[in-house]
Length: 85
Image 1 (cartoon, rainbow, N blue to C red):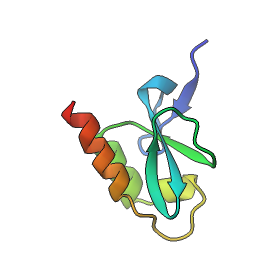
Image 2 (tube, helix red, strand yellow; image 1 turned 135 degrees about the horizontal axis):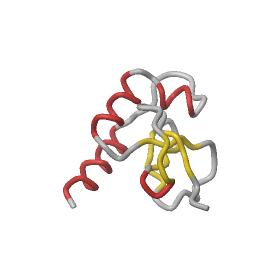
Image 3 (cartoon, rainbow, N blue to C red; image 1 turned 180 degrees about the vertical axis):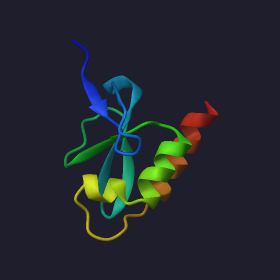
Image 4 (cartoon, helix red, strand yellow; image 1 turned 120 degrees about the vertical axis):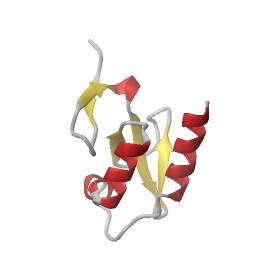
């Protein structure tokens, strides 16, 4: 059976391999490519639309139970790298 996760932005269910796990580390959102980093994680489609929606509406902060608005620039840079390849 294939593990299924839900994107925090669009709320669509997808196989775990199709989504990107995001964790909060030192107040910064970072991509967890291998899904092994410690802490609470949130899943999002690796697309500009879902990432922007999740960050601007505070969905990642809520899913990660973070207070305040975390720095999303490392995650945005990682997403640009993924989209360029």
